[in-house]
Length: 83
Image (cartoon, rainbow, N blue to C red):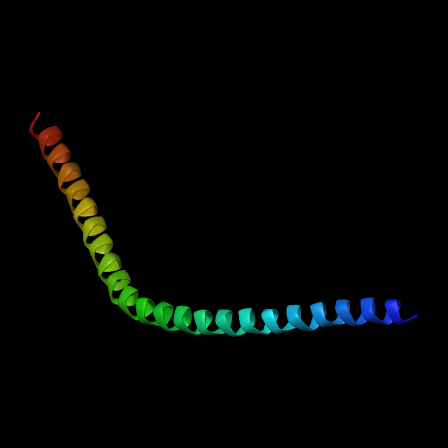
C-alpha cells in the first residue's frame, strides 16, 4: 500500500507543478494581451483620421468622374446640334 501511496503522491506533485506552470503562462498571456490592447487602441486612433481622408478623396474622385461625364455628354450634344 505504501508503494501505491508514493505513486499517487508523485502524480499529485506533478499535477501541482503543472498547475503552477499554467498559472505562470496565464499571467504572461494576460500581460501580452494588455500590451496588445494598448497598441490596438493607439493604432485605431491613427487609422480613424486616415479613413476620413480616404473617404474625402473617394468623394472628390467620384465628383470629378461625374463632372467629366456631364462635360462629355454636353460636348456630345453640342456636336450633334452642330451637324
